Length: 411
Image (cartoon, rainbow, N blue to C red; front, side, top):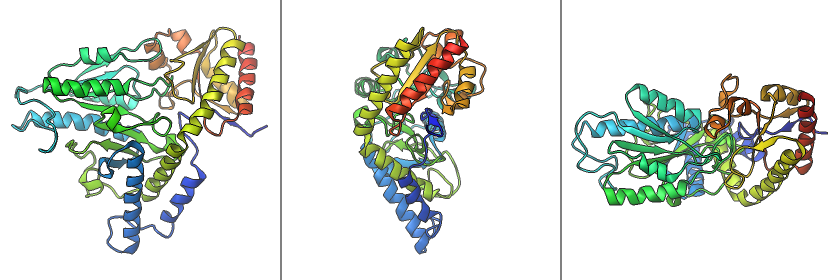
């Protein structure tokens, strides 16, 4: 029997051996500041730029469109707050574009000069990094539309476009939900938004929080027609404290952290070189092995779902069965308190979650499960299991066997 069974890979993942080994030289011999002109500083700078090229290639972007951040939360904050600052600057200037002159205009020349705090469209099931940033912007007067989702957690693209107003400056829809794993129709929304821009003359930035999706499903920023995308390394066996924001070439996103000239003057602060290098190695491996990993995870995921829903009475799968991350399982057990269940699982060295790790300890039911129609009792009886490429069939069966025992005992 293993020492423990880790079933919470949506919360974080272990640092891979390859990423760790790639990082080590930049924690020891090549410790230089990447802004320095001497040799070890230039070694660090070279490593950062090589990593930027590696990561850009995984999403079909240009290296200059990748800005390293401290992770998904910073990237989300930068995307939303920066988009608002673009909008504000346009209403204080006669220049009606958030792009360089060689790029398409963000807003038409008929945009009113009248003061208007603007409008953002998002969903009610976003990560708290988005929702709490929206709440911050609401306090500054921005109007936010939180779109509903269906019982599987899917947003309807028609609802996105029905919500657009003349003052809408941003649409932000997550690529994959962190609790129920539902994959959103980002490609369709992106294509329709591209066509809307052409037909109406009104340009709206399109952002996606891809923290749960990157490295797990194929992503092309060109195919998805994204202007901004947030990613974090620790969801794909990279180090914590590093991520990136994709900013499409020409989008004039203002600086979020002010100070030095790092990240082409957009994100000040001495670069975390070792973390950048580790991120690039983890991303390279995750994307190279994506198909093989997904195939294995899908097989084990479906096996676990089948056993849980057929062998444990009154067990319901939450989220879409097909439009779903390959490693995500979220189920509700009737008349079971998930917090109690998690404690009992922990005693058996099984580590799982009742939802987002960022909301752990909250007495409120998951906002995602409430949004898909679960009542408080059902939402508080839910368990999230997220597997990885290292999860074996034996691991999966052991966890299901223990869950059968514990659910029966609790009932």
